[in-house]
Length: 113
Image (cartoon, rainbow, N blue to C red; front, side, top):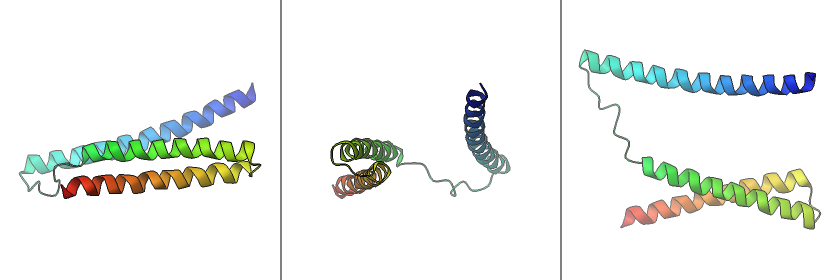
């Protein structure tokens, strides 16, 4: 019972810390922008976010690359007797990096047109 409670407690603390950091970041940014609007100051420091659709593509390609890397790492460790940790980590980073490079080429080809 102690191990289950310990695992739950550690998971809860990690999730709460992540949520707290994200919450403080967004609330601070929101308050800063409200103060600038309230005082009538220049809002040119906050350009409109035109690249939001590219963010979704970037993360999609990255996560697809990571998933393929995990699958290839599993194949290497099961069938070719590679070290399990090395095969999973190397293939995850390799295919994740290839996903980001492919995203860069997709975005640059689209922006040339």
